[in-house]
Image (cartoon, rainbow, N blue to C red; front, side):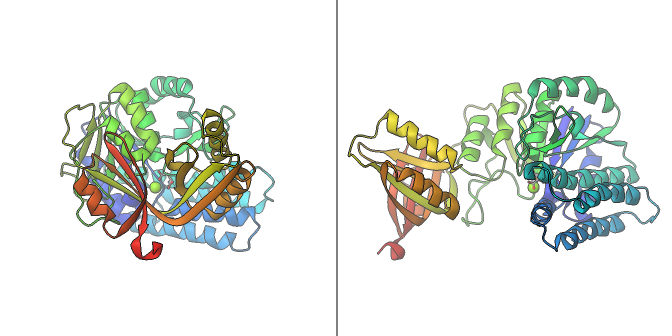
Length: 424
Ligand code: ASP
Ligand code: MG
């Protein structure tokens, strides 16, 4: 059994769906479960729709029409027969949202979010599955909510692994004995059968959950890049593909903000020793990146950039030392304000951290911290994390920068810096 995962970019238009069908068709001799995200940027649109509905904005219906039109355009391109059942099937799914939009928004916002946003995955999988069948493949649409069980935390469902594994073993395996299973990433359900979502970009995580519970031979994530690169091409013009990566390095890179794989994806695979292949759907036969247990890998330096950082320095007002008691108080405040620390350093009388600049969070965090501490902060910082650094790589990224803070461990170096011109 193998699991394939296709993200939004791979199914952003009819051409993408055809390409996906080609890749899946080439694997028709394998036992396969295919996990798919919402098409293109539809999750963003559905978030917009949810907001418009919650705030009673008059444009909710326009946004909804736009979402419907986007999908029906793709269906029109894929199915020449206007009487194909997919038209009705998708229309019926949209009707459920229509009903919801007609009612007043009285339920909890996160619950409403999940009911609306999950439709993106439901519809994308319906379209893809119908197209696979129309292309002559034996495919079966499966509702991920019957298998992925979560608690009641809407928008960030926590997986009930025991129940999920049991259902997948008992009910999913027989269903994909002799046909390709097509199911949704990102969504699950509570014990009362209410839809939940697993957090933005959660489809990789879903695919890892399915793979782990199926004891799959491998998981392949199909992306629009040639594999895991050693830097984001957005910030760096000489990127290199990393052919082999250990689970450990993959977790480290995801943790420091590499966006290629959702951070929660690796652990379930590592626990079951399931290799993760990252491949390009634009060049399906190319090598990509294999993420496995390997010990001796080639340490190509990897770079993770984060811009728009705030650097806060915190000093106890009474000039006492920064010790365990202060630190736990400070961490609690960061946790309370959901400010995720990207890097930190403490000295005897100060503690410095950097995190993503969010004006609202910053204001409320500083208000709380200021009760017991003197707080200084600087905005407009950049953070670069280098895994497998050496002096040459540090010099390269810090040219024309003032280094404000530097933290090094054996394999990882983090530098908070800003442009020289700005700081003069
Ligand atoms: N469609 C969801 C999102 O865009 C889940 C995913 O794509 O991984 O966040
Ligand atoms: Mg996505």
